[in-house]
Structures are given as structure tokens and as C-alpha cells.
Length: 256
Image (cartoon, rainbow, N blue to C red; front, side):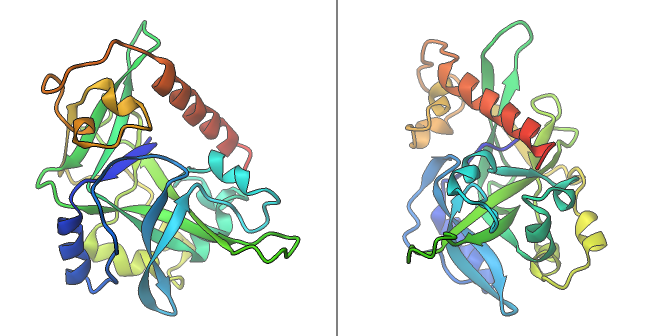
């Protein structure tokens, strides 16, 4: 599903951005547990050139009356995004990249209310780009408030290696596809062709402790393999609520 991700190695990301001639991300401290509503870097196309901006995670469509709608739009299903009012304009011409070097998935456990957190990374532990959409929202009352730049991550069906953990995963954009993905002129059919499970088996996953369940925890313990840090007593509160919220988001997507 990808309701959380991380940028634990800013130095590696900086090297990747330089190699791709993308503007640098300034102030890149390690982040191990990025949650919806956080300010995050995204890469987009501006007048045909890549630009790096900071956006709030949670898409607010331009027509929205209240920016709080972004709290429910952290993710968009790639297969149906062009059919949904919240995403169909952005998927046409406002596509972006969300840099990351890890993301988390929570595995349901049969017969239990709690879920098990997993960390997912590239085999070489290098950074990668998740597909994203962006919007710039301006208050309708013209109060002089600054425009709000927002974004959401695109999800697709999980590939074979992640399917035992979750049925969804973020859509990852390979380097060879970046220009086509960002180009507003790319046809809708070509964009729709991206919306498929990842065939390349270049990811690995491992169990982490429930330390990551709390959005207030943002340190290396979030990505430490299970057993290397002390497991907290099982509490289903934080992540169960998050899981219910993600479920409500999926249900909401059916109508947006």
C-alpha cells in the first residue's frame, strides 16, 4: 500500500540526483518514517526541465474547497486514477517522482487485529523513485494565502515477491522511463501502460519491529531487522488505526 516510506541515506540520493542532472535536495537529513501530511521532496517537469520542489504528502485537487481533503488522498490507484475526479487532471499532465530508499508494508495476520511491519528496499539498497502526482491548490476566497503544493504516491498491484505481505505496492519508475513519465505530452495510453506490477525482482523485504508503527518514531530503529532492537508490547492502536484509515481511503477512491 505504501502509507510510509523513508530516505535514510541522503548522500546516495544526492549522488543519484547529480547523475541524472536533477536539482539537488537541500537540507537532506536522514528520515526513516515519513508519514502522510509530511513535507517531502518531489521531482517534476517545469517548462520541460526537471525541478525539485517540496510538497505536502496528501493531494489537494485544485477544485477542493477545503485542503483537509488531502488527508484522505495520500495514495492513488494507478489502474483507475484517470477515471477519478481527484486524480484525472493530475495524471494527464502533473506527474512527478517521489524519491525514497525504502518503504514499509504491514502484513495482516489471520485471526489477529494487529499487523506485522516489513521494510522493503532495493537489493543494492540504492534510492529509487516512486510514481507520484502533484497539484497546486489556492484558496478560493483569494485571501492572499500562499498556494499549497501537494502530492500523492501511485500504487499498483504487488509483484510476486511482495504479494504474501500486501496486495498493493508503490509504482516504481525506472531511470529509463523517467523522461517519458514526467513529460506532460506523453499520451494517456502510454501512461496507462506504466500501471502494472513490477516484473523486475530487484526488491527485498525483511521484518522490522513495531517501533515503526508510531508516526512519532523517526530514527534508525525503524529500519532495524526484527530482533536487533527490543520489540515493544504488541499494541494494535497506532497501526490498526492507520490500516483502517488506508482502508477508508481505498473505499473513498471508489467514488472520487
